[in-house]
Image 1 (tube, rainbow over the protein chains, first blue to last red):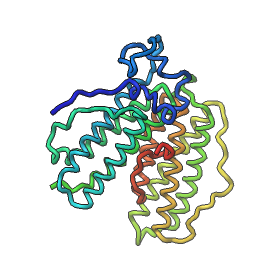
Image 2 (cartoon, rainbow over the protein chains, first blue to last red):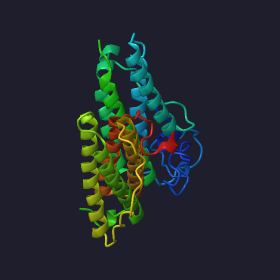
Image 3 (cartoon, chains in turn orange, green):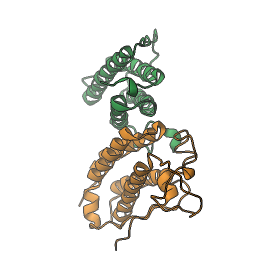
Image 4 (cartoon, rainbow over the protein chains, first blue to last red):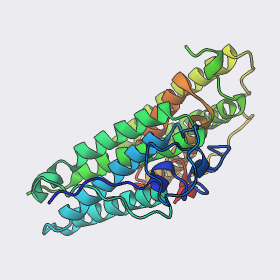
Amino acid sequence: MSRPTRLSRRGALGVSAGAVLLAGCRDVPVEQTRPGALATATGTGPATPREDPDADLLRTALALEATQVARLERVQELPLRPPSARLVAAALRVHRAHVQLLRGDDAAPVVPDPAAPAVRLLARLPATELVIAEQHASAATTAASGPFARVLASLAAAARQQAQVLGDLEVR
Amino acid sequence: MTDAATQPDQAPLQDALAAEQAAVAAYATLGGRVSVTSSPTAAGDLRAAYDVHLERRDRLQTWITERGATPAAPAPGYRVPAASRDTDALLEVARSLEERAAEAYAALVAASTGDVRRWAVAALQDAALRTLTFGGAPEPFPGAPELG
């Protein structure tokens, strides 16, 4: 089953996460800065012409992380040997922490269920981590907000670490 | 080359330089204490780290100079908390060096744009991987532990 990706405006803009994640990134409340390109979570308040320049980067980063969580949860259903099960569980904790940070108080984003079989997802985990790392790193170089760039760079580094340790997975 | 519009504040560059100066000094000490015969892998890893940090130190000095500032001088002496020749203890020191470097580069990412930020993003990833090389565990937020 495939569900459409749905990311809330608050999550996409880091509003609720802003107090922690994006503190200092923006000099005005983000909720007051976004035009109607995305539906507002509350549906209240007039749109203003100022758009958060990092909204798309945040939304993309959140989708990447949530998708990896979905993959890892699917892989966890496999009968893995203990060393591999520990690696997958640790990776899942890392990416769940990333999702939590990026979404703040918003609901978890809904992402498509992984289409590939779990065994194939398992075999491709290191490669998917590298892709995530590259995308976060690229976003970090272009983010308008320096503190948000720092967050993205840290997420990229975490994914690079995961790519390395998940290379030790036993794929049967 | 970066232009004036992409120049970061000097403080993060100087902080990163200080971290690299400390790392270069520490790795020189660690490399002299590890046994190439009994721990060839560790010796090679420490040597590789020394070379990387030396290159980064020089790069940071160049950038600071190009911005019309004076690179801070290295501290007169660095205390390396590894008196023994025990390989595990030496690698633990190396891990802490990489963690400090990761935090310095994360700060530099926040304070820079353009080529300097791109370079700092790559350096942060390298430090995170080198932490694993020296026996560390993956972290949720390398270089930014307060986010966890």
